[in-house]
Image (cartoon, rainbow, N blue to C red; front, side, top):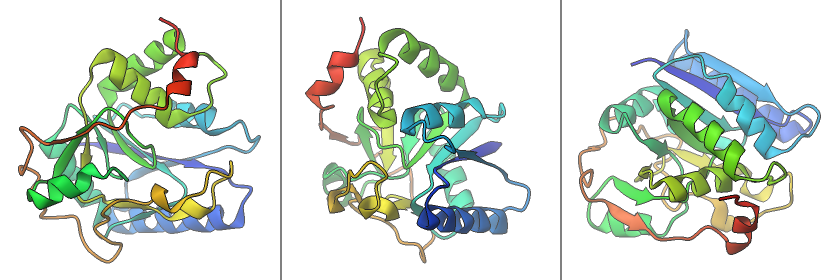
Length: 229
């Protein structure tokens, strides 16, 4: 089960450089030969152009994991990710979510929510879906639309693709109060994060796999003005 990893990074900030150093150090410590590419937004093009480049560096591995530069990762992160992929090899999987549906899943002792609105701090892409998404958004979403997560969510909604988020989250959005665009907010932390000192290994990903709790959060209405039928 091969895996490539790309980190979306804006290097002009000391805290983000420090975070990336920590992420890369953890990943390489867990697996010395892991393929990690740091994709830098040196010219401040913005989140979408940089995110697109993180997808384009996918090496052809069966799965491509895209991380933002301001996340914390659980213990045994790579091996935990491999267990998640084994449970849902054909689906887009978010390793971070702030959805309140997490609590319904947690109360049901389930390990998944189904969602068409994904956040991009930590997202597993089956390689076969990357080209399809890039081509679709090029045709249907205006070039000047800046938001990466909304582009992905619009694609999921319009194509009826099933996407899922893990319960608990295996990544935390540490930079929620350090947004480059000023979009700060405590609500942008994971609803339930397993923790940086706890392993995600051994979580029973079969629980709730067939009929998970659903997140009904809608894409913001003003995003759809950038959609082209």
